Length: 253
Image (cartoon, rainbow, N blue to C red):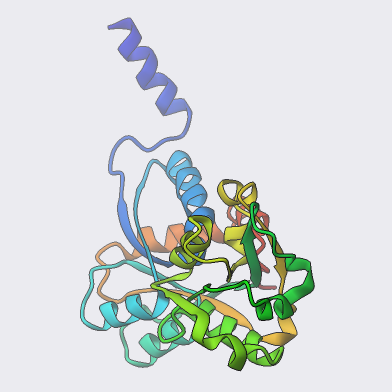
């Protein structure tokens, strides 16, 4: 009994909300995989609230939300998708938030003989058989990869070698597993502790592709709008911003 009382006291004094804990469901672009998993842990620890995190491609989530998928918050790798939802009247007025600008890198596994410091020209290497990118039809990071290859004038010579991941995380997995020789992934994934020891990267100049402006929005259908707003506020606070910076995101402001 004494031990139980001690545990309860510890939780109370830690500031965790034991009563009335809220749960929100978040749809987030796959480039946020590692950053948001850390962010959610800190948010739950700080507030006592719960987060159900779904990761995938921004375009697929956009289509799901149009069809009534029950998310509270939507974090897209392309701010254009939440803007379209806003125009369609599917979002909470004034909730659209430009939360980050993403970057892309050329990434190869540590066992690779390829020298990524040569930049995208290395993709012309005849030894390369498969190049991983996210599917540009619905993944903003895939569109950025294609734009960068076109900018460096290598796209036409390598387009038949492209292997399309459902999202940017899957593209990274293709390279990490050895299924692909090299690829273009999000800087936020390359910088993650889980990935940093498994590969080497070269950061693609931001001038080579359109800005990856990333946007979030609270969905009108959400039954937890205030809780969703509190998560956005946590992201905008110092703790949330520090986490995003550590994963290579450029922040607004």
